[in-house]
Length: 429
Image 1 (cartoon, rainbow, N blue to C red):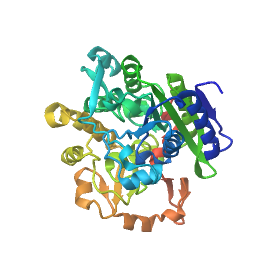
Image 2: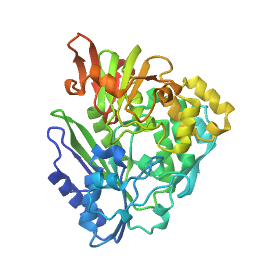
Image 3: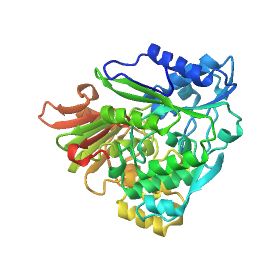
C-alpha cells in the first residue's frame, strides 16, 4: 500500500481488525525505526473517535523498540484523570507516560501570523498578530516520530476539527487559542461550521506549514458516521499533508452533516455525563443545532453531570461575570473590559453560546449547578429529573419524534458527533 493511506468504507464498518492492519502498515512505513515517539491523542471529550484504540495499539506494538509518551491535546481542558485514561486507552499503559499539557506555561512560540494577514482573514475586524505556538516538548523531546491522532468532525471555531488544530490549539498556548477562537467568532460561526476552508483553518495551516514542518509529525485522522443506529468507523486517513485533511473532511461532510427540510421548533439534546460536565463543552448543543433551530424555537439541554461553566477556573469566572449575552453586547464588553480582552477565547465562547435572542435555551442540570447559577448566565432552567419525566430518554430516537400527545420534537443524543442545519442555511464552499 502506498503512503499516504486514505481508507474509506461507507458500506461496512471498518472493524478493529481492519483498523489494526491499517496501523500495522503505518508502523511499517513510518515507525519501524523510531526510538522515541510522542503520541498526541484527544482527551475523553473525543472518546468515540477511536483515537484511544489507535493510540493504545501503537503503544503496544512499538513499546519494545521505542520510548513512547502521550501528550493529550487538551487545549484549555482539565488534564485527564486516571479513570479517564483507563476508559479511553485501557488500564495497562503506565500513567506516568501521560504528560499533561499546560496551555498557559508549557508553550514555545515558533513564529507568528502577521497583523496584516489577520486583518485580511478577519475581513478587517482584527488588527493584531497571532502566535504560532505549541507545547515545547514537540521541539525539545528529540522525537523520531510524533503521531497526531484524532477525529474529523464539524466544528464551531474552525469549520472541521483536527489536523493542524490538534497541534496549535490542542497543544497550543494562550495567545493562539484566544486569538484563533476570537477570529472564528467575529467572522461568524454560521459561516464556518462544517466548512473545509475557513479563515481560522487558513491561519493555523499557514502557521504550521511555515514554522512546524521541520518536526516529524504524522496525522492519523478518523471519520465516523451512523450505521444501523450506531456510530461506525468509516474512514481512516494517514498522512502528513493537507490532502489527507481535505479528503477526510469530504467524507465527514457526507456522514456528519444533517441537513433538514424544515426548522426545529423544539429540540432536545442529551449531554453524556462522562463527556459533558461544563457549558464550555456542553454548549455544543447550541453550536451544532443553531442553524436548524426555528425562530422563537426552544432548545432543551439535558445535562445531568453539569457542575460548572468553564473547563478552566479562570474562564469559569469570566463566564459567570459576563454571561451569554448577545454578540454585540459581548463585543462591547471586550472593548471596555481588559480582563475579557485578555481572554479572547472566553469572549469567543460567550458569542458561540448566545442565541442572539433568536431562540430559547433551557439548561437542565442535575444537582451540580443551581437554578440561580443557570439563570445568572442568561439561560432558562429546569432540573434534569423534572424534564426527563416529560421527555423520557428511552422513548426517544435520534431525529424527529412524535410524542403520544402529538407534540413533535427533534432529539440529538450527542451533539459532538455532527452538525444540524436546515438545507438553505448550509452551503458547502
